[in-house]
Amino acid sequence: MTISIERPTRELTDAEKRFVGWHMLVAIIALLVGSIFGPMQALQYSNVDLYQYLEPVIRSYYQGLTLHGVLNALVWTTFFIVGFTTLTTIKGLARPLSYPKVNWAGFWVMVVGLVTTAVPILLNQATVLYTFYPPLQASWAFYLGLTLVVVGSWVSGVGFFLTYRDWRRENPATRSPFIAFAGVLNMAMWQIATLGVAVEILTMLLPWSLGLIDATDPELARTYFWFTGHPLVYFWLLPAYISWYGMLPKQAGGKLFSDSLARLAFWLFLIVSVPVGFHHQFVDPGVPTAWKWIHATLTYSVFFPSMLTAFTVIASLEYAGRRRGGTGLVGWIRALPWKDPSVAAQLLAGILFLFGGIGGLTNASYNLNLIIHNTAWVPGHFHLTVATAVTLSFMGITYWLVPYITGKQLVSPRLALVQVWTWFVGMVIFSNAMHVLGLLGAPRRTPLGDAPYVPEEWNGHLLRTSIGGTILLVSVLIYGWIMLRTATGPKADPEDVPGIPIAESLRDPQLTPLWLDRFKPWLIAAGVLIVVAYGPQLWDQITGIQLNAPGWTPW
Ligand code: HAS
Ligand code: CU1
Figure 1: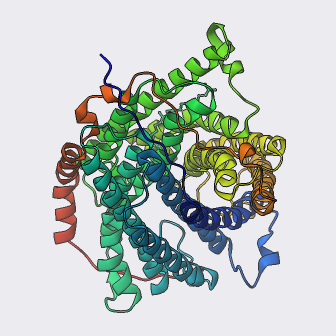
Figure 2 (figure 1 turned 90 degrees about the vertical axis):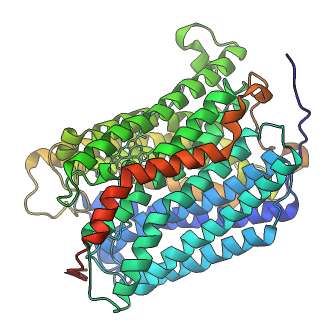
Figure 3 (figure 1 turned 45 degrees about the horizontal axis):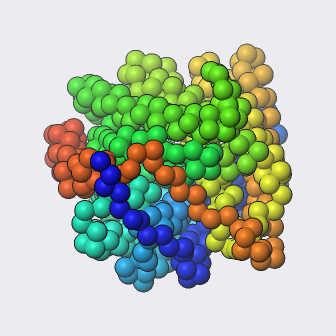
């Protein structure tokens, strides 16, 4: 049966490229500035205190740690994702944004929010780390700024939804193109997920920081926070998955193995990524064990779409490798285009994600979590996930995206390859050492270099953390240099500028079942599951609210 539909294609206009480019500019600057502080923390583990040279601007390890977490985990990711998924939406749907002014408004609200957040952090009035748990208290401007960043991303999301709606009206029978579908879905998930922090900030943290209420309820705040906090990690991950499923196979010379499996994975993320937040609160005394158990079980169900992804993406890569002449059990892996920095970045990101994922499952196990919670293991875990699976993939994407939107050629692809591999090697050393330190009991969020209680057996691992961190610093500096030189270089011959890689699917996407291309049933399922898995416990915590923790500003 052939029911193939002629799919139009369309390049981005100059104005659209500029729009995406502004997001990338803010994202990459945030990555570069935030990444200065990470290695400083890693070096502190070996008692090399670089913070002293930044005084009085940066006054403590914790102020640096806040900058690192906010700029790298929140700003780099959010701006990159909104820019990248704008690109995938308009390229995928082959139509312009329906209301570009809405999307521009979203961008500017995010920028105003970013500045409003950054000022108090730089003034040491928001040294509360990226999780901003009360009773640590920040200036009201910090909370307001974060709210604006989230609201701005919502506005951009609305711009996506309206564009998708218009496309759907014009194409009622066509399966939505995967890269556009997936970006819009990620935004929908984000809007549901961020209701948690929105309520946390608006009902508690903002009035508290403004002096309208005297104290907060830290337990309820944590519950709201992790309502958002876990799906947040998938909001970061799914754009990397868009590339792994929808672009990388093309870059590698193959096709997407299954459009249906790809969509199924994304739907599963939409419905199960929110109701698992209590796996961050296994040690919280205010959450009854039964709810922790339910969320632990649901966490194992959100493991499933990652397994679908591992299967489908690796199958797509195997198809590509064999097409390129690779044979045997592993010969196809060697045959992949490892010399292409964009491909190598994403392959290496995927390889480390296998280990990050295994660590995630360890965390999700109620009893094993008691061993690793609040130890260095946890930053070890999230540097494999958000700082590698996500960040290294995003870097790989920029190796074609920045040339595409600027009309330039990538400066020194060989150096880019060095950058990609140094990130990989640095992260292997760093994250392995952090995992081991965690198992030995080293606490997270702690300057260990000059701590008096550090046992001898930690020393080698502390040193390895510093070495890994230093290699990562070199890598990110190379990255910044390549991006700067590429963006400021001369215009290239249009023939030499890369296009947007879009992988075809092995089977015509028109054959993908209709139920995998309709939002309504899945959004309803997501809502129902949230009400079931969060409703009763949230209700208990809200009706039993105890505003008894006054603010605390230790640093
Ligand atoms: Fe996590 C803590 C559980 C995934 C990020 N996580 C964190 C924190 C962050 C974070 C930032 O249950 C710290 C928060 C804080 O500050 O307190 N996490 C999980 C589980 C998964 C998981 C079960 N995490 C992520 C991802 C993140 C992320 C993704 C960011 C992007 N995590 C936890 C738990 C905690 C936690 C607890 C709380 C710990 C505590 O006590 O504080 C799963 O989703 C993982 C499933 C993934 C896999 C891997 C599949 C492999 C694939 C790769 C295929 C390979 C390819 C390459 C394509 C099972 C898809 C092929 C290459 C060739 C050459 C062929
Ligand atoms: Cu989580």
